[in-house]
Amino acid sequence: MTTSAQGLRAVALGGGHGLHTTLTALRRVTPDVTAVVTVADDGGSSGRLRRELGLLPPGDLRQALAALAGAEDGGTFWAEVFQHRFGGNGALAGHAVGNLLLAGLFEVLGDPVAALDEARRLIGASGRVLPMSAEPLEIEAEVTGLENGEVSRIRGQVAVASTPGQVRRITLRNPGRPDEPPVACQEAVDAVLSADVVLLGPGSWFTSVLPHLLVPELHDALVRTTATKVVVLNLVPQPGETAGFSPERHLDVLFEHAPRLRVDAVIADRGSVPTPARLHRAAAGLGGRAHLADVAAVGVPERHDPDALARCVREALGLAGSGIG
View 1 (tube, rainbow, N blue to C red):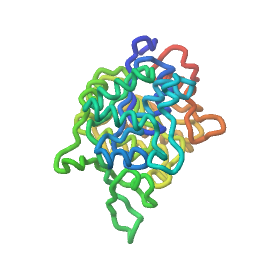
View 2: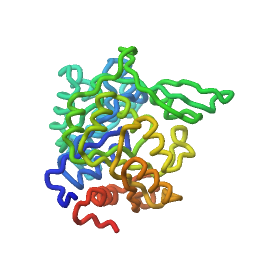
View 3: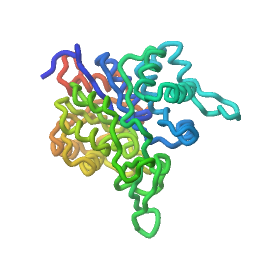
């Protein structure tokens, strides 16, 4: 059992606010953190830049960089500028400075990994941010409850995240090469294989968490890695994507999309688990153990407290001084 975080190599997979939360917590555990970020966003500033320039959607990548720069704790001046979003009603309205900077770096350097490394140096982020694929991808979902009880197919991250129906299953495709499977970023695969701990979740389950399991090389790396694999469950169900889901149903869906995946630990908020025995059984079914703790932020029940989550991660890893009972 690990007793020290010194030299611990951590990888977190996800996107959006969920990944930002995980990275903020992991920075309290180890300085060696790599984020592997989904690249299927098609909404807001990211969607506009993706459609207009044909580049990777930068928003989730920007959020991960900001988390590793400690933007929530003050960070650097450039980290603050990176997160600034333009107002007004003109062409720049709604764009974040970091999104535009990343788009420019993608075009100038022609390599998203090199661009993200350069942005990391600029804003003083520790760790590394990598895309799960070097090409923008598209999510397609099977949804029920939209019409006459039939299964409907909808495409696009925003459409899937906001559907009034019930998402049953997703697939991932490359719009530029629809007949070929998505190709993983090799640096992301290498990071997973060499990690000591890999975290999956929290976040939008079908649009930020599960997509990583649908990129064949990344899926295989997650199955093969000797890292301790930790799943962090959401605090509340999300309308559309996981409305009505119990905590254990999240794990069932994970297994349905990746039957070969086994995990070592499942972290959940004590107050978000109505039937702990069921979650313990579901975690055991994936090969792991459920760790219940008070990880919700005080007064913000839908958001994890980074310090509490960091303590629970330490406990799941068997690190000394976790402070978890």
